[in-house]
Length: 321
Image (cartoon, rainbow, N blue to C red; front, side, top):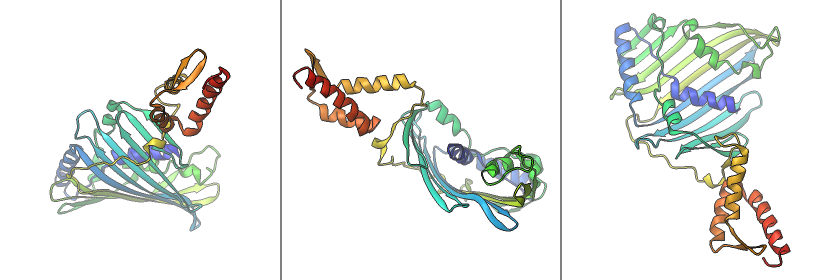
């Protein structure tokens, strides 16, 4: 699930495709829109992705996803990013929700299972992820295309976008077994239909991609229908991001930039600071309630209470609590 979510986040930041009826005209339209959109100091986008697998015409699996992402980098060196993911597993009809929020060098991630973790991530790492919201398209893509005002559409051979199409179908092993048991599939692609529209100010308004792929699986002859539409919501407008209201429920993830021992050491220092130790006894400090609330927000109430009870028990054994 983490890999899928990372893929969706990468698609939001990276996919921007173009086509042209007149190669020069369409290239100019796309290049100008890419430069303007990349230069946005804040943006709001919605991606809708559908990957549906069928075997002999019967639904076999896949997923439908919606990802709403917002970025505010108007304050230099302090970007804020918030994505909300909604994923539906078509094979079982189960829906999952997750989110990623970044501010002040910390990523707050809620997994599809409801787990809430914090990790430290450098500003440089986040900013490098937003260097572009578009990618270069091979020249072959422009060979069969149509330009109608600000709307550009093209049908291109999937081999011209092989890396992209394979990325979309990287989850095929979740629904099928490969014929040779090696996890590899040979896809027979249709042309990839691509369309993008720019608004009156020259920003991307939306980008859409659609194609089908036939393949042989251990389960029989199968087909994948893939479609994606990424919409830029009011591009050029400032985007204000409101933090999730549950940030106090997140705990530090052990896979962050600090070792487990370092994280545990920090936790112990904060809990010990809630007491004054003298003559073998432990007494709560005056602002104990405030420090207790902060510790619970970081490490969960259950964990903090376990350590507090141990410290208080030691204090009681010393004869004075």
